[in-house]
Figure 1 (cartoon, rainbow, N blue to C red):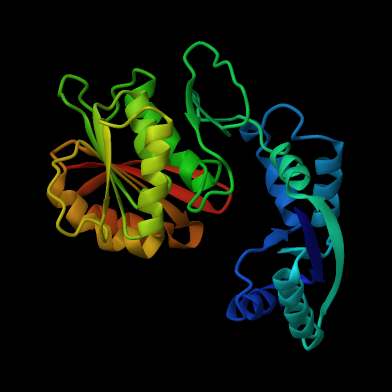
Figure 2: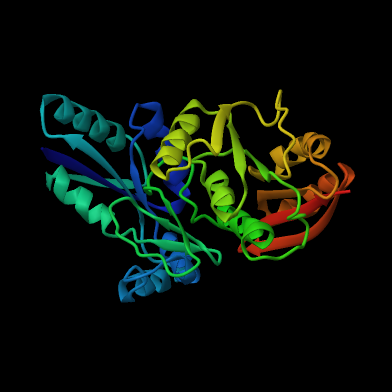
Length: 325
């Protein structure tokens, strides 16, 4: 099928207002290309393999840091009567906004642009052992590597964000590399509770790294659906279950490890309930914490009955590992 492509250029100061206007008018599916993304990729080269880090990315990162390059939003419409009508509505909306420019053109068929989108995503290693790969890529794991198949573009993350990768690294230290920092390996079964599970990636990583079972909790119905699909795709059904819920309300699981990649305020709210369920010496891994919130969250975790054993940092993000007193 042919598609119509509407390309919108704007400055960073107009991006939020433009997104809001598009969403309020029903244009919820959009592709946002921000030059600063190239900076993030260039600064985290260890997360990306093969030809993803190339001269084009490096040049784009240099230009972005120098302040060059507009933010581009792209909308796609089917090349039929309905799609053409929606395109006209979008153009009328944009013509009334300041600080934006736009143009429309016909694209190739969907298989062509889908292939182009896919070719940018390659298997990526997170931590020492976990490799996240898209379904269309073949990958032969090296000795000791553990592969999670997950297609980028899904809601709620694919594991490459700093907050998720730090959680995986913390799990590896207690499950995956033989260390005996906080977890007692003689206590079985090892049960992991993943609060705010999203795609289920942390629950899957925990089980692959050696946990016997995991329970994922998320308040979003779509997250529950996606996580269950990913568990089946990776052959982990029977070892991981997913439940809809609000944080730990009504949860009686007796976990050995709780991992919660949320946000600072939610981690503060969650910590007393986490302490109530974890055994003495149980591990509590939290992430999604901005650096400016680090001290507030650390105090809340300690006040709830934990001893902090490590703070992981990646850019502006922090993850905190603590044990129950």
